[in-house]
Length: 483
Image 1: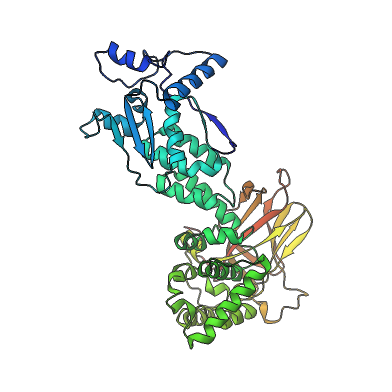
Image 2: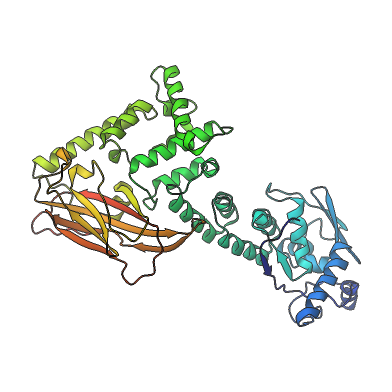
């Protein structure tokens, strides 16, 4: 079965009979009726320590591996097992089969059809064998097949053990297969863990292999989320999508990580030359990727000239998507700088989640650092500073050669949220801190401390993810708050 890397003790409701023939003797003692064993019943005898282990192994070898005193044969996937109804009835699947009106109820040989492609003969062998022993070993590489088999056979304890293995072994190599399995078999906790892992690692530790495994629907869900740990700016989300799309279009591509983006650019440039002006996402090949690209927050890409030029040059995104965004951003800038139109004064969390700017940075060491993002929200001169284990938001326009990138308004207002995370080598979070969405109104050169890590055990590097949404100036006498 291969190397075994994690072990769990499975305490069955059934203990082994005293002797290999005990299953039939118990049946005869009760008028030939086949009984499902239960804790404390006539089939149960508790033995401590090594004796119990030896007995479990003896029963497993005699009854399961050798099939002694078998009263039913199970056939599936080209294999056959000589087994015992009294043991099989621990499974909800077989328990219903043997106690109901199924045609297999009284059959000596039962052919099983496997409706799930994740089930294989090895997993079925291990799942059936688990009914005869107390120790079940589930290697992480086999957990999906075991989970599929346990789900079909309705083995709740085995399902729980699969869940425990998955919780401990989420990584770049397993995250997608575990997430898809959790979707299929209803493991919501595992699904949430895997999705959070992807939100943390898609933009920080993503590999070509991982990008290949992320489906169209899953990528759309990830790009939609404001929980996505974006490093730098929204343009980096676009670049990740471009590489992901290229790998799905060229599944046999092999090259270095450094060559991935240039090769993707060459591929789409070749299409552009041949497409006679049709944007790639409007082509037959590109339409499947539209739902993911539609989740980009284009307003925060086109506000930076180099990024806007790349978008135009790539010709992936249709002009019909971009033109309304350019128009709205320009009018919003004019309103912010030249009019007293205050716009909405009620801001909802859903607005912040769906429309906020996503950006971030990395603190490699516990030393002073600051970030300023070009083209940010109508030239608001915001700086995020880290010093003395504190994070401060500061408006700082003085002595900065920023040209038109800085607003001259005396006071600016923003909704913000900061999230901090430390990740271990497997990409799992060892530390998190979240400010939640807050309102901020700063005058020139004013600052506000938003995070204090002075008394917290933090391991560097730390990822700092930011969400910002520019708000109009507040109307006097009409206070604004988050709804």
